[in-house]
Image 1 (spheres, rainbow, N blue to C red):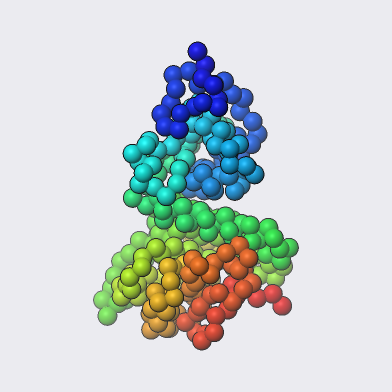
Image 2 (cartoon, rainbow, N blue to C red):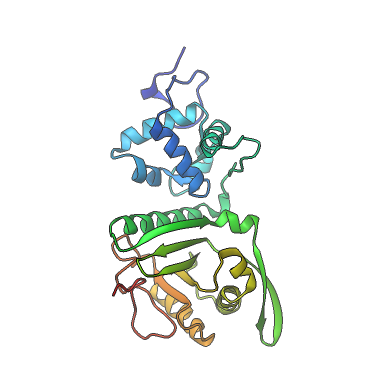
Length: 290
């Protein structure tokens, strides 16, 4: 007997799921989950595709029960801030087909990094905010986004000096994206920082290699240019101030931009003075439009 769609369990799959016709929106949901580095939360999917909560819940349940999506079980869910979804094999086959490749050639995230779910959701939130901020103006376009998984799969390796000692490091930003205006291209590397304690190692582990990377032949080979900026989103003003001080110590000038989760929003990301730089006493907007 086929289950009633309105009475589907929150956890676990039923033996005979309700029949469903895969809609264009369903396909776009599957594509978006893959595009946003293989995992999205309920609220992120709802933000992109639905106006009502109950409608979103029912559709995602159907996609889960029909094995297009996976989601955590009851015990796993208790350890997460909200419900998350990632592609099951049937969903991956749909996205592969839409991409024009076979499932054998297609690479997708088969499991989220459970120890890093909150971090990965924070990256998605920033990405959604940036997307929406650019859609709200005709002055700036979000041209492209390379997700973190690409840098984990194929990291660039660089050398830099610390206390007259050569250190080798793999560079794995939380994302890379390009903003364009009518006159300029702006390349950004993202660092989502969720720590609350001051980190004296930030100078050695983030600032110095971050500066070296942008000046490196590896960066130029990958992105076709030697210009770029690091955007760092952190937890509070005290930690931000410590990071700015370390950037000044490295003479980072305008290479690093810092702000907090509290200040960063759709309305403020581009044109509001929420960003702190090592070479400025006052905060500045990300984009200046003349």
